[in-house]
Length: 612
Ligand code: M6R
Image (cartoon, rainbow, N blue to C red; front, side, top):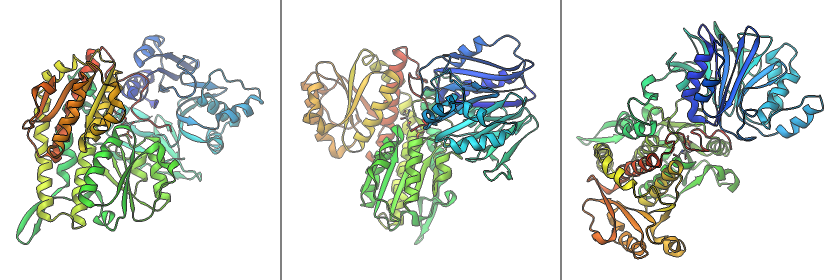
């Protein structure tokens, strides 16, 4: 949801900002702009479209050592050059990521002082407000403005009379920064810093950062100086590049075996009991004690999009193993349901970015109501990770494509590990049973390699989907959870309407939409419900559907019931969703590519959704 970057130092600022914006473009890409201090004051260039368009618009020889840059995902006001950031009012030029909820009231108030906004954005109102409060003391103006602003924001601000300096503040939206040999740099995401430094710190909410070429000064909300708490990323710059793949999505799909190893293997220990040695999940290094999973009356999983679909799989696992009620809530709905929360409720939030505004709000509500909180997060130091009582990092590595792939399977692995450990901690699985399941999880990883070799098959069948206007995914139990994920993956990047249906539910209304040649992707990875699934497949087949069956190699299904059949590598049914998920990702990927679409940056979407 908008990428922002600021740089001041010994390099050409425009170059640093453009490189950074290209890395941040996955966060939003409808328009882009930069403002730089030059000999003639602040020069601003902005344009509709991607960062490449912005690059083409820059005046030759733009010479600057300090500036700010923005790539936008429109919230307030359409996609236009005027609404693109940076916004200038008087001596203030700023970029913003977030939403100012009370901007209309502020605009009315500021208009009475003779200021007239030129854009429809909430961000320009923030620039006007800060300018109205600025009398030479930037920090005082920012603090006074922050006290008036409702909503979420990360700002990088230039004051025309302070060349070489950038001020930043955030609430609810992310900012990470570092001072390195190149100078001082701040951005929405570590990926924009990575070519300069592996060390970074997260700007605390309500801290003000003052960036100069020779360092970054931090001031706390009470005005006292504070010091950055530097962290180091374990991945390098190539992790956030395409490395020979056509698209980030393709690369990230192929990274899944390694990503899953990073999620699982560090959490596996040898456990000794009565002379026997068992392989068990263990979260001591994550500082997650077994007590988090004990004496629970219920579990609530809340998240958005793909992360919520991982949670649906978590529900199946927890209910099977723990025998306590588990609900999965869409994070944007959670607060409005007045959820029943107490100290015996475990609320699990799931988020790749760790910045999704609705998920963060759900977490805050859970904490304030005294529930136990555990978050499954990919991005280290993100807001959700920092605010959760316990964090399980998935270690999937940077995920750049808007469509989530490796983060999803890593989230699934996290749920499996947590369910196994929780069942062991509650005496629901013996050490031997838990060990057998954990071994099964580990042995699932090679099956992903085998699915990745099925490129030709998935590409060939995707050709049949490119002209579809509607499509259905059906499955039961775990396969229903997976259907939801297959459906969102396909629709977000191929723009083909699709729906996920519990296979048995179709006949209660939706079957009327199944006509000749409507593609139905039937997931039948679970032997216990296979006969029922076969009946449901026959129901759609009888209406002329074009059926793609994804199933176990030994599943007996009459050939006349499908057009394509994908046999998954042999594995225990418990772990089949992993390989099946990769099949669905490949189908979505090829369909989008064959339709000539922007696989990594689909229209209207952004990777990190930091607005509610
Ligand atoms: O960063 P998060 O995991 O919290 O993001 C949640 C969703 O926005 C995200 O999973 C989205 O649904 C993906 N683009 C789907 O591929």
